[in-house]
Length: 447
Image (tube, rainbow, N blue to C red; front, side):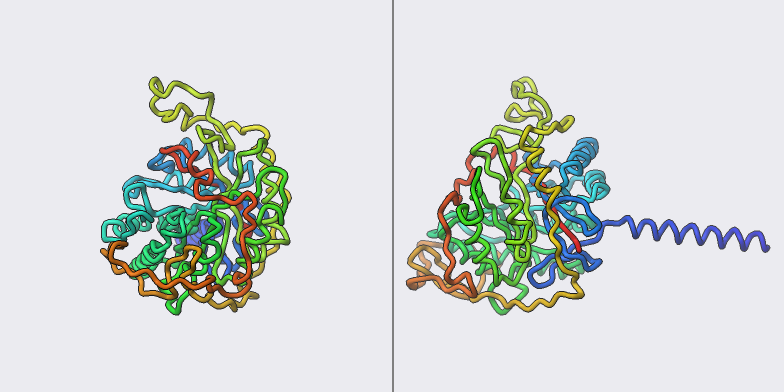
């Protein structure tokens, strides 16, 4: 009896120790508070990418194939190992198959300390600025992706769209993006899911800056506003600088922003080599108090020439169909020189200090909703959002009377784009492989 009691006690102790070890090793989930990301441990989270007791996280775009790169266990393990060497601890994936099993890949990235930022849309369900609509089909598709990836603690956040708006004269599509945010957040809450952040990734278009970022965060109803905003920025190219590149204006436009903000794509490919000098600004003293990190485009080498690694020499796609445009989509990741090492050197030296959630007060208020402008912004204030199933009919819509200038809040009211190196909507967008919208690596720091 005594021996049996001891055995039970020992077994119970072992079980407790195992459970404790699992809890300790589990990756902390991410949420938002005010203008910052935090882990559930109370540490601030920066998308940046190197490991530290504070947890620095750098990000990389990761889309090996057009549909879903997160289903090949062996490839994910190889890439996760190499990304850890680079210093990344976040990836962005643009298209996934919600019916596939992602357990092995998500586990491989979690074991490497890597988080996922995932887009909910696909080529067939994305919101279009040409014919804006928001319907049950798209919401169901978005919800299916959320259902699949909410299961993984290292899913950091989700996007409802990527560069939907690229022209001011089609900015009347913006309410459809905001309607998607509203309904995805509503679905999330109705299912009792954790408050995984729901946001948007914008093209860096001068005529839409900063009105779009303000519009997605404005209004009296938090349920209709984005949880975060991110920007695809290709301004700091070659040997540029903080003012010359336009980054000073990006910072000025964002200084009073009330929700987390980060760079969801960056990394000019011209001129060569890629220097990634903008990382020191985003993750350094100039911007890290406002911006929550950066994601670099992109992981693999393909026709668009943004790759940080290669899986081998180009082949004949007619003979090797898995290579798509002739560039292998699997294999041993080999760093592209000197781009890979240039980025790695930057990330190894950058570690934003951040703040603990217990010491942080979310004091910034939502910006004023922008009014219509002669320069192209077409949404006049806090207009009612489209209902589910609504389609924009530009032939019958009455355009708002434009004001002379946009109404913005805080420092964004006077900031303007430098124009130097600014993206124009073709970004380096046009050069993206049709079947591959890169997987990005990110770097995030916890304090």
